[in-house]
Image (cartoon, rainbow, N blue to C red; front, side, top):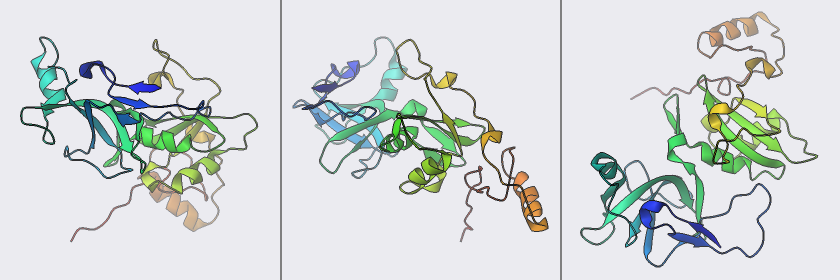
Length: 255
């Protein structure tokens, strides 16, 4: 039985029965709420988001604690009135990111603390990581931000045939263009913190020059590369460079 729950809510608030070992590298769902817990996935407006959309997991019910001892500011930020429950009840904003599946089962996707903001877009790296780990040849994935560019760190299974272009296309097939990493770093081992989790701050820095770049040819290509260079992060540009993957952004006129 996979049990989920923060200490602020008397521990377990959701269970997911396991009838067989999960596939290596796959995530285990949080499951469904316990009988005395209420679980909501909320957007930035603190309203429930549709099935399949990532939001912050909020917890209600009798197990929600009174708050943090001698820390009223932190209590006020994390414990809010429950607009969906009985009068006087409260919700605990967990800081965990999750989404409901069509089957009514809750999936955990990481921490809100890791939320990235890139050129006006709010990006949940856990959503990209979870998608990458659905690829049969990806064992583990972590997404980070470096110099205004998304970086995808990945570890493949034995005998895989993955490369940067395959991974980019796999993400592009299901997620918006701004969520496709611009750079990829293959990992054989992962730096870990004291809790045994991936230490994101210790991940190796990506190398812009690591990408295979076809040489520029015509005068028009050279001119276009010069224009791009004034807009994009410093990097090598070639005739196969992709404006948005290199850090560009779409702009729409107003009105």
